[in-house]
Length: 458
Ligand code: F0G
Image (cartoon, rainbow, N blue to C red; front, side, top):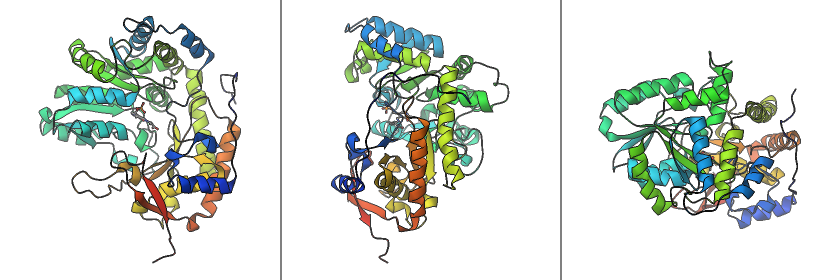
């Protein structure tokens, strides 16, 4: 067995507050784990976004950042790194993924148009809808079954895609491949599928983009699982993936190993020229886009580190270590294990809680109460309401995500997490669901407040 390809130079203390304090924090914060202070969280698996430990090279880059308003040398570094790794000649920095989504959809989406993809992330969907477009998920059916063992559950159903596009290519604003597919369990998209989607998009002259938040982890899965790619380097796989795209949008807070940052990268100068003025309005001048020079510098270095094979090998194996621990004790989890997180099937573990009472949220809350672990619900709460009927969407997948920050936790932390989940699962029948005390109108999981529903009542 290999050790992680790094050693630790700086440590951050964590502490477990008492169970009664945890119960109080839950009540004070309306049972919403987003509202907790992080000092009250022991193991924070809320997200893998912006939570990476930066390397000594990235910290050195912070000192070298060029803070010029225009023409920053640090911008040149990120633009040349994007071109070298992904092949796109035009890069627009943005402060994070959703900043890019705001700019992109403002220009690309006309009211009533569709954006087709495998499974849109929540901010992506919200920005498409904010631009008065419709976000449609076209992921393969296997993605909705947590038990089927399919190597590329993030794939787009190409029949569905062709059918929707051929009804009227003008009604399609663009096609977006999210790699890996976060809402489907961090599941990858195969090169074959990327190629097929490219053919369909080009046949109808529709723009094809990648949500590249976790593109490097996706490339790793292609290397490990797709015939013909085992001997290719991650760099070559990434180049090929991106060669089928017209561009990408990236939250650099994931695979570029930074705490803040993102970019839009494109092949087409004309599209870049349409986006750049909007970027100035919403994010900042095209050479900084809402970031400081030091952020750009750290992002350029992190982008290269994020595709190192030894790092990716350690990273994915660490996630799978937790998956295996939970699988071994019989916890129902999404399989095969994804790239950045392990997803527990809350609906299956707590079948007595109806979707409208948020079983996976209940699981998150009990895991916090039991051991100070903070996970996140990816289910009915996150999915929100149908804009036309106002009813809860109740997606097929109702999951608790345990996201693993990059280069942050050790094996002992994950052993602890598995122990806590085991204890929670043992008392699953007593766990209560939740109902709204206050429902936030937009991206409701962030700010809503809840109360427990007594399951003993008829
Ligand atoms: N696209 C994907 C696939 C994401 O997972 C996220 C964020 C975004 C876009 C938006 O990027 O946060 O930089 O604005 N995902 C985080 C998560 C929040 O926890 O999965 P952002």
